[in-house]
Amino acid sequence: MKTHTLLLAILIGLMIQLPSLLTATDTRVETLGASGVFLEDESNIWNHPSALLRYTNQLVLGLGGQSSILTPASELATLGTFALPRGMALGLGFGSAERDVTFAPLNAEEQVHLFWGISRGERRYGLRLSRFGTIRDAPPQFERSVGITQCYIGLESMMSADRRFEVTILAEDTRFAEIRNGDTDSESTAYWKLGLHSRLVTTLTENVRLVPVLEVTVGHRGTDLYTDGAISETREEGYYVAQAGVAFELTSADDLLVILHVSTKVDYLQETTSLSSEESGMTIWDIAWVGLGLERWVNAWLAIRVGAGLRLRLEDSKESGASNSLKEVHTLTAHTLGLAMQYGGFQVDFAIDPTYLKRGPHFISGTSMPLFGKATLTYRF
Image (cartoon, rainbow, N blue to C red):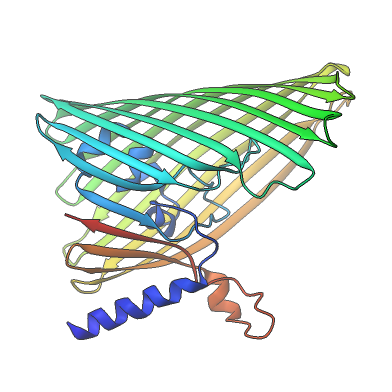
């Protein structure tokens, strides 16, 4: 027992090499081939709040955050979940974290999250309300303000003893303003997003599970650019995303978990501007996204995780006024590595940076990547 405690202390001590403090709860799914919602995990409550009732009475503290090429940053925060009487549950989260900058270029902090869940018969209902504010590390010549509000409403229904259907409706509203060069130049942006997330969790046998996933999102952003106090340009952008895939999950008798997911995803962005009557657009099509993750509990207190991912991506862009579009094909690969240690009600999950293992530390320059790109401490009570 003393050996276990010593190893845990050493690993926590190594967290001083983590990047600047960012809260996170999805360390496990990132180290299993970026499996995301394809894997049954505590982090599912962010996209499917109806899952809250399965993950109550725990405190989660993120100790670092960094995304891989296959894992867009998610809206995450330090979180506590609590079981309540009458089949209800409550979750509270707060902290700071960077957001996905694909469509809304905002690095927001000062997050507050409220979760609520209730179970009624064969159905469970969930709600997540999130609020983001301010901008991190804004240059002194800029004045920036941002307000982001998210609402996720989820329903979970047991269709049979071995089949569960989950669906979530989401809405997001973003208001962003920036003033440059004193009060002469500025930018004002309003952005909304609506989406539908669904998945069907089917238990085929005691050790085999199949999880089809379908997600659709639409969004719109309007931006007004001001020069010398007057509107100089207006931009309108439409954003459309669709993803469909399936995951195969196998658990063996010797505590080995295998997760394989295959999906396809299409992102389409359309833009018009007051300076041109023609439209520009970009399509990013992940023709095939394949992820594989392995998790093995070596003993009662130590687990090792490895993962790999491959994306075959087609990018098709057409600039305003251009007669032809530009097509490019990319192959994106990544591999992940992680471990977990548990002692009593505590568990620490680590995402190990493969770059560190290849290059090692640079004691003189100090420019090497940290050993742990992300870590999460969970206490279950």
